[in-house]
Image (cartoon, rainbow, N blue to C red; front, side, top):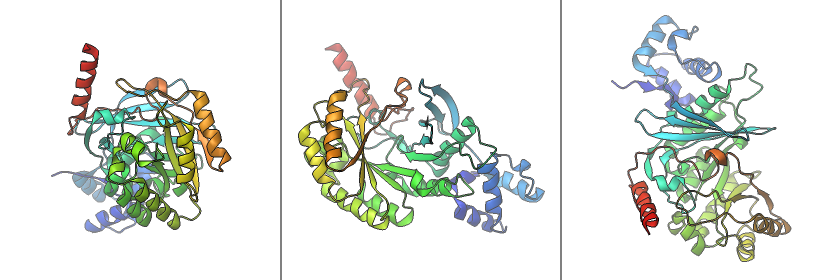
Length: 367
C-alpha cells in the first residue's frame, strides 16, 4: 500500500484525511504546526498526538520531501538547489535574498511543455507535472536549508514566485493546494500579495485561478504583437493576445487593487526597438501594470543575444514617459545559471525535445 504523503494535503485536505481516520478535525492544525512551524517530520516526536494516533499515522502516511542533490551559492548571495524527486527526476529551486525581502522561485513541472524559444528550460523538454508535495516541498526544503527562524515574526522566506521550471496554469490541481499552504497561517503565512504565479498565458487557467485562489499575477509577455509573440512564445498561437488581454482584464476585475506584472525579456534586435515599445504602450493601455524588463540570459545553442544596456534604457524610458511603472530586473545568480530562463534540472523527457536540441547542436558543431 502506498503511504499518503501528507504534504500533498492543504488544511482542508488534512481535515478530511483525519476525519477518514475517525479523528477530530483539529488534528490537521496540530500536524501543520509540527511540519511547517517546528520542522518535524517524525510522527513519534509529535508529543501532543496520542501514541495510538502516531502509530496509525506511521502505518498509513508519511512526510516525504525532495532531496537536495546539489547546492550552489552565487557571488550575489543567490542560492540554487538541485532537488531529486522520488522517481529520479530533478528540479531546480532558487533563493534570492535582498535587504527588505527574500524570494523563493519554485518549479511547478519537471521541465516545460511550452517551448519558448528564448528559454533554456524549454530545451530540456517535459517530464511530468509536480505533485503538491513536490511544490510545497521546495519551500519546506529551502526554509530548512536557510534556517527556520526561532522568532516566527521574522520570515526566512517573505515572497514565493512560481516562476521556476514549468507552466503553473497547466498544473492547477496541484498548484492550488500548494499555494494555499504557502498562505495559510499554519503553513508559511505568506501574504496573498507576496505569492506570485507566472504564466505564459494559459487563458482558461486564469479564469480558474481568479475564482479559486487569486494571487499576484505575472504574465510572460515578451512581445507586443501576435506575429512576434507566436515566434517567441508558441502558446500564443492557441491563445493570442486579444484573448490573453481580455482574460487579464477579467482577472483584475476580481482583484481591483492589484496590478499585473508583465515580464518582457530584452532580446537584441528582436523585441527591443522603438516600434515594439510603442506597441507595448498601446497594448497595456488602461490596465494597472508593472513592466519588468529582463535582460536575456544566454544559453548554449541559443540564436539570441542580450540587448545592449543603452537599448534597454531607451525602451524603459519610452514606457516610463507613457506612464507605465517599469524596472529593469537586475540579473541575479547568472554565475550559477539561476537567472531567469536558465533553470534546467534533470528531466526524463517525454517529449524527446532535449534529444532533438542536442542533435541540432551537434550538427552546428560539425558544420
